[in-house]
Length: 277
Image 1 (cartoon, rainbow, N blue to C red):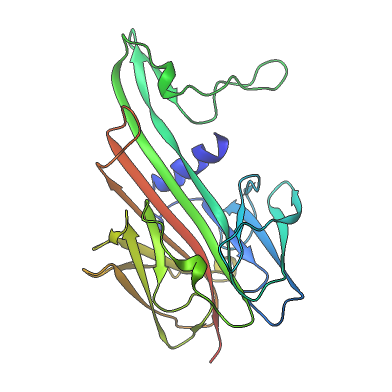
Image 2: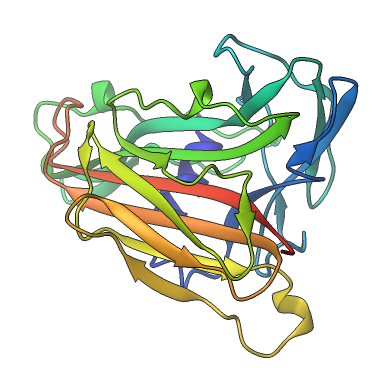
């Protein structure tokens, strides 16, 4: 639930003004042959991609091999400010690494006292352990002011060994999804890339997307750009310079499926590498 609380907090804020951002940073996105490894840093921080706040949690990181079957992370480790793990790229094609988190967040009142659903649970006790967070099932019949939001968040990156492939890019038809028209591992500075976003399998028209280059620690301006998808759900992005970029999209609608939730908040995050021409 701690992971869900972090995701919900990030989704609740516009990307351009959020103090802390969740990210994964691969050591590279393009590799030759099938004897390579990629190392990934995972963190939540003020500056992209400088770990200064909290480590990412890697317990729920999944790996999709180029044929779509499950892979695995290796050498996982969590420190004070970041987590690190490796993936052996022993099959040719494009791999997907990431997390899919979902749950219900919100509040209700009992006799005028507000209680929270989801989140981190109660305050730490004498042994340092928190009481478990409340769930929808814990809401009593006499509760009032029930306000629940279904939260779903994807954080994915893509790496390619040899020639790029598209199997792991196929949508599932559920939630907010990133379906590239331009392959995410074939991005070049000065060239326009196009990415399609879908909501439950349909074009996400008018979706606001934030694109931010890494390295804010070493410049005054953040360089964030707020872009919008077209009627077909396609976003056109031009890259002013080579480097790593953080891309994030969020939306809220009334299509919640979780019991008693009245709205749904969806988020998608990826890190993209743009190469020099």
